[in-house]
Image (cartoon, rainbow, N blue to C red; front, top):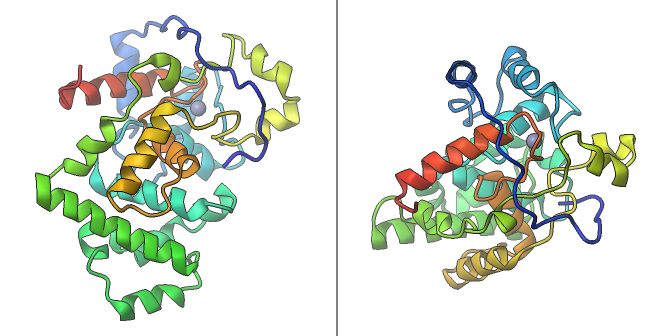
Length: 277
Ligand SMILES: [Zn+2]
């Protein structure tokens, strides 16, 4: 959730020209765990540093800690097709509603343990005793409505998988990746980053969150409506926007962020693999 809102968020203009990377640099980037460490959202300092070095040290948010930087580099905005990872992201974004991202972020390990490794097939079968256990679990956010929403969402996912086959939920979500780059990308910074720095002072720039200056778009509202129609809970436009950003249906890294081009490349791979290109 944005801590500050900026009116007239910069959106729309065509993307900046893509930087060309050599095959050598692409290969080296792939060796540091970028595509393999989403499950725990963390890599060592060496992995984080590799991206900063590649981009000249620029990271568009997540500078408050090494853990947050690793999440920024390896998870947030990385196009995702794993059902468990997507269910995890949906759950964390839902849990964040009304709270700070840091609060939820620091409880990720407890959430993962409490929700059976984010296996929706297991969560969908939680019984009343297990729900009561969640309500007594001090490591997580114990809001009854949110806990019930997570379990109901798991059941909706499984219903889709059983009705229309394995992978249905993932394919359904990816139908809502905006076709227009004007909507899919967030144009916020000049190559030098001066645009952002002209609207935030340096202190604000360092503290801004991943959702700053972005508001639900037409496609976000359409997905929110579609999820609600299927029985999903807690899927209002604001939560759905954060969900779409997190799983890479949109690439809302700044264009000069260290992972922008990496996520663009993975986006093209995912779209091709899903037969949408
Ligand atoms: Zn970024």
